[in-house]
Image 1 (cartoon, rainbow, N blue to C red):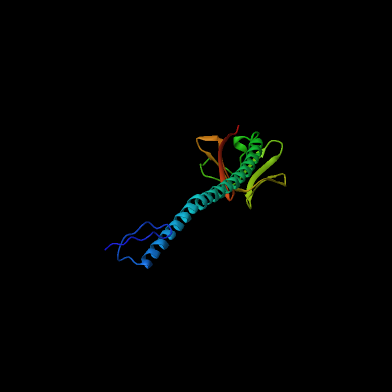
Image 2: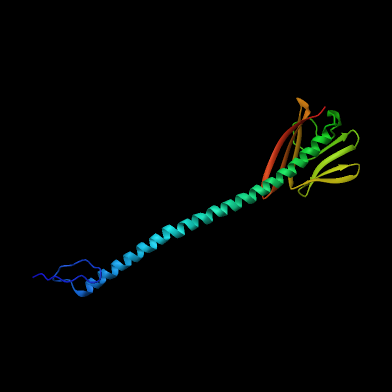
Length: 180
């Protein structure tokens, strides 16, 4: 014998002679939980994921901006080194370079005789590049981690210079300077 019951608050019509009232309540509760879960999923998809993505993009942008600013500062320091070194070496001659022989090995400083200034030396102390001339010490640039200079046997008139600027990020520049 089949009996038909009226659906309870949004539950579709169930026809069964053995289904009790508690089973109907459990079904209603499951449907409400499923609706609630769907709402939670929707909120998560439309709110939390975009917020998370936005936070990640913001973090990367800030990090890249800081890195770019540091590289800009280091590039300015490298420019100062190049300007000074090239200007001072412009009047030097092959035979006036005192401590960088034409042996192909890298050296961390250079001493040479410059026409009007006399003996001039470039060296690094404590991440700063200094120029020493006639007993006067001048800081040329800050954040200079390494200065490497060499001459090859086959090209004694060319100085190969490698300068590394570093402060959280690093920049390296390589140049060749022709001396007379």
